[in-house]
Image 1 (tube, rainbow over the protein chains, first blue to last red):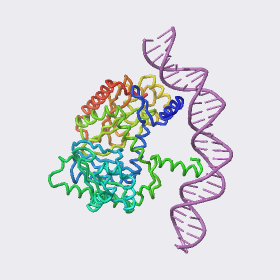
Image 2: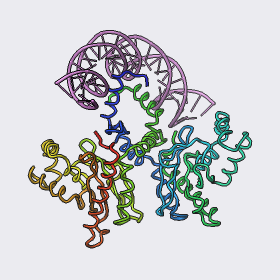
Image 3: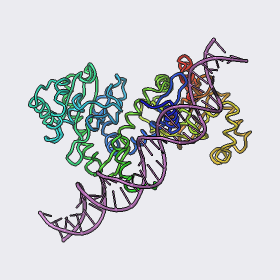
Image 4: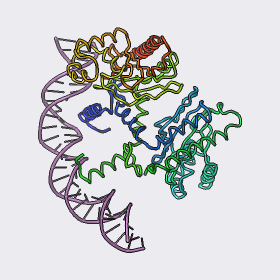
Length: 226
Length: 226
DNA sequence: TACAAAATTCTCAGATATTGATAATTATGT
DNA sequence: ACATAATTATCAATATCTGAGAATTTTGTA
């Protein structure tokens, strides 16, 4: 990091004292307890997480407990998982867990957020990321990209199969605040755990859950991440 | 905070850019996504949490799913809950959740950590906190205090009833690294959810779980928080 | 749409904290 | 017990931060 020995010792010492680093014999340093503490305050203070927790639990109750419900929030040029509710039955853990940030173009959550952004913003994002989009999605042109997202917007949900992790399905629906998409609610589960013909019911349940969150958000008028 | 308007705007702006604050219309600011991200890294990087997660799940399996297992780590003059595993059956949520720091004198986790500290350190803590100890515990003298802790050390576990939250029982056992107590594993549940005569079995299971974590820690030689 | 007031950002000289070389001290391994 | 490495302390030089005030943008109201 191009700092002197003095500064290195001093800075690490300061970070330890402030609780951001934690010395561990044999393992050097790990991140400190301050993050655990502030993380709790974050969970507690975020009105979006508060609004979404119960609808997410209900989503699992109405579909399957062999799944995880995640809430992903738009954050700059990523979509970050900010909350998750585990189903009660044992099931594989989700790679897309709380604290992971995904590129805007991968995963059902990202796609449903993108699909519901206003047209101008979307075009700008496409132009700024044309190369990455070509690399990580099947869309080779603006037209194809826009078509795919329009279909998602029409359907009210996005579904991806094996895009984030092999054999796993993600179904996501958008959460709105003041007509702007701010987050996505998703159901993540193994392809094997979807009973025949149930997939559309599951998608419907995800849409309902997301709408419920939007509704809640609407009546509390304090949610739009600027 | 005794800073000028200029600095206030500048600092808040910087914190937002760094992801530590998140502006929300109508709600001012909430803590930012950086904490969620770093919290995940903390969970991922902390060898103690890694060692304890599975034994904690087994503890619930062997006792009751109507409970929460928590891992509390000594941190300065508090004991902080750094990990929790929820039982699968519905049960009241625990006030002592991840990210909460407890005084050293309240709760089963704190007591079991105290009880297993080395004698000299303990005496120092008693002398430094005599007033607080008188206020928040029943121990009126060093002798009474020491007796109570010695009993806990002998038993291998601490049990509190209604000390952290009304009607809730906590049972905690110590985790050691290099012969020093570094954490406590606890089972938290409602008094109503303990079947008659099972409480001793539960305590035994908690001791086993904590020993298992210590064992794991012993063989990885990189755990002692300095 | 126009206006006034409030909120926010920008600018820059002065105040302040940070930096790193060096010395002093403490830990570690043999 | 010793040599060596690791860590902390000291202090002048220097880069960064601060806040007053000007400039700009946003907001509320008519």
